[in-house]
Image (cartoon, rainbow, N blue to C red; front, side):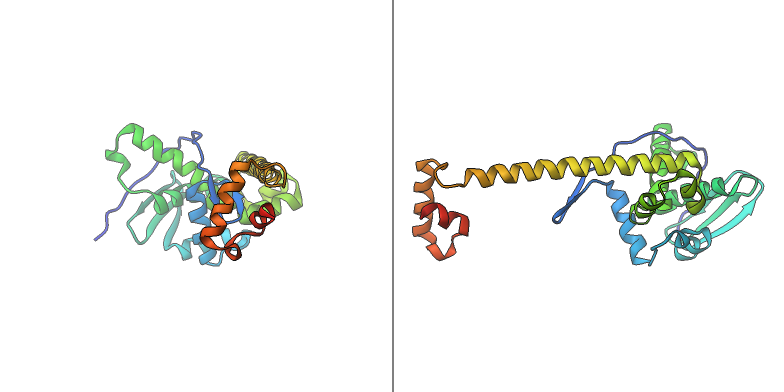
Length: 230
C-alpha cells in the first residue's frame, strides 16, 4: 500500500540550474529537465496539444477533479488524485496542474509534517519543474523562435504571461551559455592545432613522440603526430 501526500501553498524562489554536457553538442540544462524531457519523448509528447491536462493526466495516471476551492493533490507511487480550483482563469488552472504534477512526479514526503525549510525547498523545485513540464524546451523553443510574440505563446501554451516570459528568459540564457562555451571550445581546439604545426614543437616533445613511434609502431600513430615526425 502506498502513502498519500498533501501539498499546498505556493512559494516561488529562484534556484541554481546544473550544467550538463553530453555527446558532441554542449547543452546547458537542469538534470531534472533532461530527465523529464526524456520521459516526455518516451510517451510520445511532441506538440503543445500533447500538453493538455486531459492527455497528461491520462498518461501519468492522474485523476483530475475541478472544484471551487484551492488546488491540492493526493498521490502515491503509482497515481494521483488532483483537485483543481475552477474559479481561476484557464491559464492559472494549468499553472496549478503543472505545479501539483511536479510534486507527484518528483517529490516524496508529507508537507504537513515537514521541516519548514524543506517544504520551501520542495515548493521552489516545483516552481522550476512546472516550467519544464508545461514548456519542455524541445517543444517550446522552436515555437518561440517562430512566433516571436509573448501573446502568441500565451495563447498556444495557455499559461500566465509572467511564466511564459520567465521560460523565454531561461532559454535565451541557456543559448548564450551554450554559444559562449562552444566558442571557448573552438578557440582551445585552434590553439592546440597551432601548437602541433611543424617548427613550433619543442625538441623534447619530438623526442618523446619519436620514442612513442618506436614503441607502438608508426602505423598506430595519428596523422598529426606522423606529420610532426617527418
